[in-house]
Length: 263
Image (tube, rainbow, N blue to C red; front, side, top):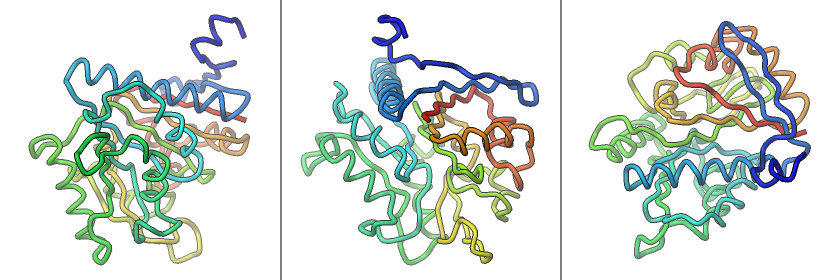
């Protein structure tokens, strides 16, 4: 890598292939540290641009173990955090203090820049708005999101997404009944029922709908490991949402989708 490339944190290699008329581009990094720095810088740049253009920034982030170091790196960015709001891509319907909660992980990783009692810092909007009623939780989360934009669907300045080895993203899994409506619904948030065959999802979940995710200015997926890269390559050959959620998402997304991969 050249010195200039190193300063820009650009990827060491770029993979591209055609998938049903779309070009899939994957920025490849030798390790998760370099990939995480690249993504954190991309998020910070998008948030700065949004604040400069519209005086505020709204973005969405995924959960799991993979993005946690990105959030921990992001807290060092020079931003006016009081003008930033972060919402979730999806969440398990569990108490927000449990280990399985993405809300807990995100709050812990981003704690230094989150809003305090004086509202100084970034606002964090968890999708868990009602732990006792999954349907009510989705409805309340939708209202909270719409309240960010005067009752209308918010336009997200950045979407940090992940993908599982089964090619699920958000809480949109293969062979889940929600796939019949999640791509076409006018709703922003939907409840996701667990599978009964032992496959994921094993817990009830809440997810943003595909139209809600599509309403993002920049969408970036972060994946790690050869198995996920191989799964992505195979999935882009299939656009059936029941068998290949990520393939279906790429095919229908109105904007270019970015992928970052680390070995």
